[in-house]
Image (cartoon, rainbow, N blue to C red; front, side, top):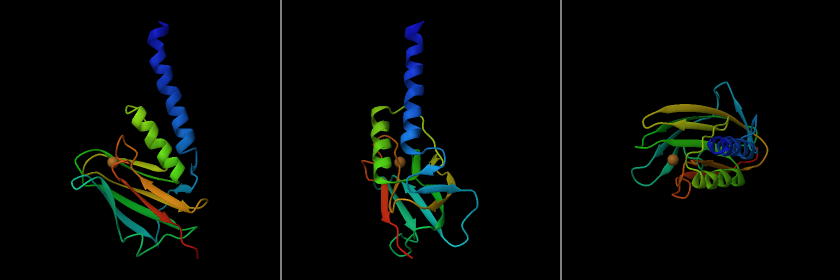
Length: 158
Ligand SMILES: [Cu+2]
């Protein structure tokens, strides 16, 4: 009986650790999710895996930077052949979660700062940027972060 229960306990403990480390209740170290779509700043993001795993932003983050305090909508489309995620966090949060996912590939995780996308699926997330200024957009599915599936940006000052 005890042996039977043990894997369940490990799984639920991990998911608690994971959400505490990565998302928290309201967002992440770099802001929080917002329900209303941004009227001023929208990026279309593709998550792809045909020519390496990557995110592409349109417009690019270089040509249209995000400023501290901005509310931004990301319309994310998975144009690849496998599942992907789009998460918003700081470097520490993104790296910690991708490391945990590598060690526990079956681990389920979710949070207000992550959208999960099946192939050809499109979802949107609206985020108010506050807190830390160094941002990591990342896919933390096992091996994807290491393969280069992330983009970083530094919030611009007004
Ligand atoms: Cu991915």
